[in-house]
Length: 450
Image (cartoon, rainbow, N blue to C red; front, side, top):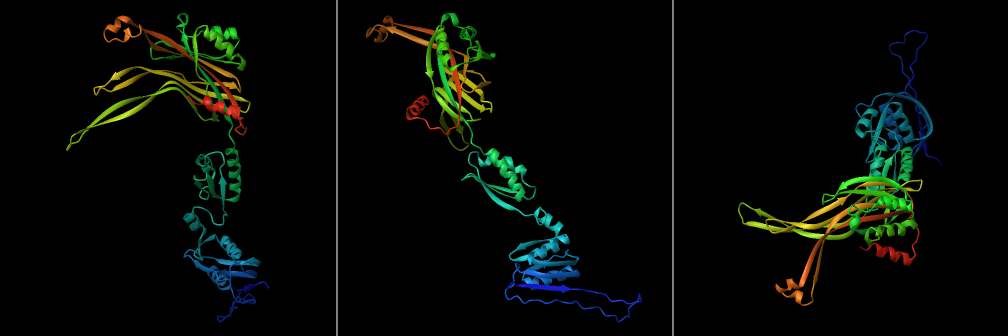
């Protein structure tokens, strides 16, 4: 049997013939309809019929509290009169209808409903009464949850939406209206997608230039004879020795690599320094270093007002050799834009400090460029020239090692060699979900060890 209660309150004023009623006129008492007694009252009970005519709202709250068991406290600014007719509605829904009709609202805390004006509610909670919210948890699979949060935070409903991050499991916890949550879901799906990767095959070649090519490899002749197309020309930059060098960029097909390398060999002795392969996520930077890390010591002294002078030594490190930083960006048309920053450095001389520490003086050749090529096309980057001091010693065995007298039996020759670093880069777009056969995996592993 459905538990319910009904109440009918009617207030009428009697008058006759248009004449004033006697001073002792009677006012009809409120008439109450049949009311069922509820052994276990609850705000989920249903109201069969509720008819109110010009009833003070404070009395309405008392009526609902008596018949449903709701604990209701009305604020001092809660005023008004209620006239309405409701049938077959839950008590809480009836209360909400009455509040909205009178620009009122409520806050529930510890089982007590505190009635206030809608304006007071909005000032207190920063949002309008009656707006339904929902909390959803979004698992971020590929992107960083912190980056996604920065993107969608401005999209939240003002004064309503809230967002929290669980960095441990890369999740976002968002509270907002159901419609807004669906909109945010579409935005997050478009952001959180599987990124493509770029496999960069690099070949770094050192050319010891012959006497006829001290200004560098004649790239114009090589590109003309090999039929390669130049993409960008002559980006000047200074190197440590004060000589001007010209950086030349071009492209060639994969099967033309050996042809170009043979042409370079006619201009000097060539040596392959390294041929690493490195995979990098789209829009992330890949770094390659072929060289060494040189240590040097710095000394610092501190004197306190009440104690002796203390001396501390710090060991610092600097990378010298060939460094290559590449940042690829994949386009939908199969092209790859590559931001390339090669650097050739050497520490040929040192500077001695007052504490007899030797600080290396690093000479650097560096260039920054951005180029757009199709997947699988090789980029040529040349013009990174530097001077290298070469010490050659020849001697007669045994006699050349005698102290002092040995100088007569050995010869030392110092010369300067001009070398040019030529870099070949080939980008390959990969998805990262294709398995690699063991033999190729070992090749990649060996090539990344330098």
